[in-house]
Amino acid sequence: MATATLASHHLHFCFSSSTKFSITNRRRQVWLNYPNRNSFSLVFCSSPTSPPPPPSSAQVSEPSTPTAESCVNVGLDLFSRGRVKDALVQFDTALTLDPTPIEAQAALYNKACCHAYRGEGKKAADCLRTALKEYNLKFGTILNDPDLASFRSLPEFKELQEEARLGGEDVGYSFRRDLKLISEVQAPFRGVRRFFYVAFTAAAGISTFFTIPRLIRAIQGGEGAPDVGETAGNVAINVVGIIVFVALFLWENKKEEEQLAQISRDETLSRLPLRLSTNRIVELVQLRDTVRPVILAGKKETVSLAMRNAERFRSELLKRGVLLVPVIWGEGRETKIEKKGFGLPQKAAASLPSIGEDFDQRTQSVIAKSKLKSEIRFKAETVSPVEWERWIRDQQKSEGVTPGEDVYIILRLDGRVRRSGKGIPDWSQIVKELPPMEAILSKLER
Image (cartoon, rainbow, N blue to C red; front, side, top):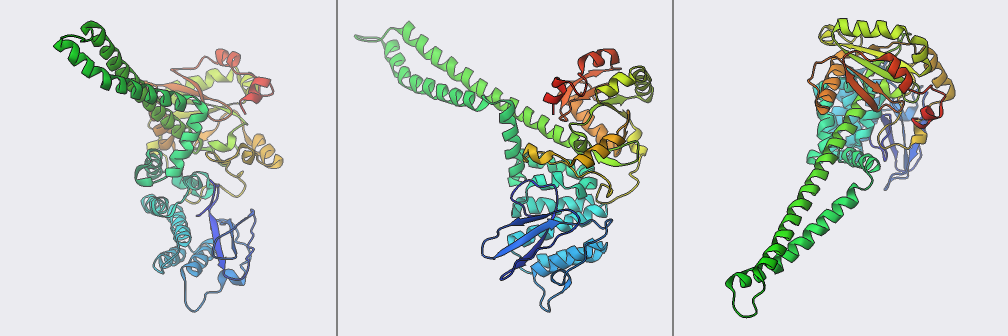
C-alpha cells in the first residue's frame, strides 16, 4: 500500500474528513499526514492465519452508499478473518468506485496479497505491476512485506523484480533509484569520472570542429597555409581522444549495469527461504549479522561429501557462524512447498528492511534475536529449492562459470557474497579465512 518509505509491511487505510482514527493491532501503529483531509492512520495487516484484532465500528460498519474507501476497509476486515474470496470482491468493487490514487493503490496491493495467499502468482504480479506503474507503489514494500514471502518465491516475482531493476515504463522507478544509490556508495567516484569523460569528449569535439577547416586549408596549400603534418596530428589526437573518452563512458555504464544486476541478485538472495532445525521458516535476510551461510550446490554425492568433510571442523566453523545450506541439483523439481500463504509463521522474527531503509531500522529486539540464534544449528534446509537453483545459476553466469557445475558460495554476515569456488570447499582454509564471530573483523562486517 501507499507509504512514503520502503516499508516491511502492507497497510490498512482509514480516512476521515473530520476525525482521527487510531487502529492498532498486535504489531505497531504508523501515523502519516494526508493533504486535503485531517489525517489518517496506516497499520499492519493481520494475515488470515493470525487472530484478528477486535474490530471497531469504524472498521466493520458498512455505509449504505459504498465508497472506494469503505470497500477497502471492509475488504481488509474480511481478509483478517480469513474470508479471502469475499475480500477480493470488495477490493474489485473499490476499483470501480472512482477511487483516489491512494485508495486505488491500497485496493490493488491488498488484492495482490489475496492472490498471493491463494497461490495465484500471475494475478498477484499483475496487480502489483499496475500499482507500481500507475499509483506510485514503492517496490521496497513488496520486498520487505513478510506476508508476501510466498509470492517472492515464485517466478512471477523474479520477472517483476527484473522489470523494476531496468525501470521500464516507470515500473519500480524508485527501486532502480535505490539500486543506483547503493551502487554510488560502492563506487563513489563513478559519477565524477563520467562527468570528466563527457567534458573531455565535448572539448575534443569542439577542438576538432575548429581544426578541420585548418586541415582543409593546409591540404589546399597556398600562402599562409598551416603545416599539414602538424594540423593532421592535432585532428588525429582529437579524434582518438573522442573515441577513448566515449569508450570509457560506455564502459562505466556497462559496469554500473553489472553492479546493479549484482545488487539485485543480492536482494533476491536475501529473500530466499530456509527451514531451521526447529522447523521455523525464515528468509535469509533475517539471519543477517547472525550467521555466515555457506551454500553447497551440486550433485547429491558432491554435496554429501562436502557436508561430511565439514563435520570434522564443526566446532571451529560454528565459532565462525557458518551455516551450511545444501542445494542439490534437480531436487527442487520434486519438492513442493507444504503450505501456501503469507509466508512466515507467527513465531517467526519480523523480516528486516533492506533496500531504502536506514541501518538502525534493521535492528531486531534482543529477545527475538536471541531466540533466533538459539534455533540456528549447523545446517538449514532450503524451501523453494527451484528458486535457490535459479539464483545460483544466475550467479554462476555472472561469474563466468558453466551453470550446473558443483560450486560453493560463502556469504558475509551482511548477506553479500564473500567468495565462491568450484567443487568441494577446503574447510581448513575457510577456518583460517573467517574470523570468529566475536572478533573485530566480524563486527566490521555487520
